[in-house]
Image (cartoon, rainbow, N blue to C red):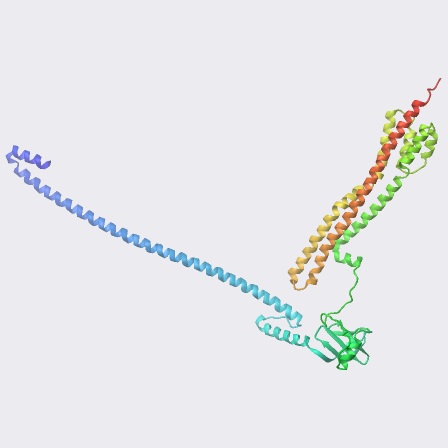
Length: 434
C-alpha cells in the first residue's frame, strides 16, 4: 500500500525520486531490523526451551532423589521398629532370666546372683548335682528321728526324694519328712519292708510312705471345720457368717412371735360370736379378758366399745389393728434387707479375693498354685456364704410374711364378724321402757 502511494506521488511529481530513494533506504533498514528481531526472538525461544528442558531434567532428578530418600526413610523406620522389638524382646528375656535365676538360686540354696552370665553355669551345675542326688537309690549313713522325737544314728534306704526307710538299733520302718531335711520314723509302718531291704531281699509287701520333698514337713491332713472355713473366707466371709447368725436369730424371734400371735385365732372369734349371738355378751367379755395375743386384745377392745355408735366402734377397731400390726411385722424389713444385701456382700468378697489372687500372681508369678489358692478360696467361699445366707432368709421371710398376713386377715375378719354380731344383738334386744 505504501509503495503504491509512493509510486502515485512520483508519477504526479517527477521530482519525487529523492523521496522514493529515502523510502527505500528506510524500508531496507526496517526490514533488516525486523529480521534481527525475529532472529533474536528465535534465539530467546531456543534459550527458553533449553532452560525449560534443563529445569524439567532437574525436577525429574530431584523427584527421583525424593523418592529414593523416602524409600530410605521408610526402610530406616522399619529397621528402627525391628530394633525396638528386638530391644524389648531382649529386655523381657533379661527380666525372665533374672527372675528364673533368682528362683533357681533360692530353690537350690545358692547366693543371690549378681551377674546372670556368670551365675547361669553355677545354677545348671547345682541343678544337675541336685537331680543326681534326688534320683539316687540305696543305703546311706544318716541320722533320723524316732517316733518319740529322739535323734538316732542309723542308715537310710532312700528312693530319691520321694520315699525312705530307716534302720537303726532303736527302730526300723518307713520315714517321713520332719523338716530341715531331717526324717522321722513312723510308728509301726514299713517295718517289714525295711527289714527286707536290710537283708537285701525283695519285700513280700511294699509299705511305702510317699512324700514331696525331704525338706518339706509332711503334715497330717486336717479335717476342715467351721473355724478353718471362716479363716479361709477372710473378713468379708466372717461378716457374712455373722450376718447369717443375725438372720437366724431374727427368724427365730419372728417365728416365735407369730406363733404366740396366732393363739386363739378364728376358733376364739367363733366362740365369742356364738356367745354374743346367744346374748351372753358379759361371758364373752370374760372369755377374752386377760388373754394375751392380738386376737383376744382386739376382741376385748371391740366388746368394751359395744355401747358406742358404729362409727366410734370402727375407729376403735382401726386403732386396735394399728397397735397390733408392728408386733406382727416385727423384723420383716430387716430380713428383707439381709436377703438383698447378702449376695452383694458375697460378690464384694469374691472381688476382694480375686484382687488378692492377682496381687499374689503379680508378686510371685503363677509357679506356686498354693499361694493363689488362698485368694481363690476366699472368693468362692464368700460367694457361697452370700447365697447360703440369702436363700434361707428369703424362704423363711416369705413364709413368716405369709403367716403374718394370715394373722392380719384373722384380725380383720374377727373384728368385722364381732361387729356384725353386736349389731344383730342390739337389734334383737327389746326396746327399753321408761
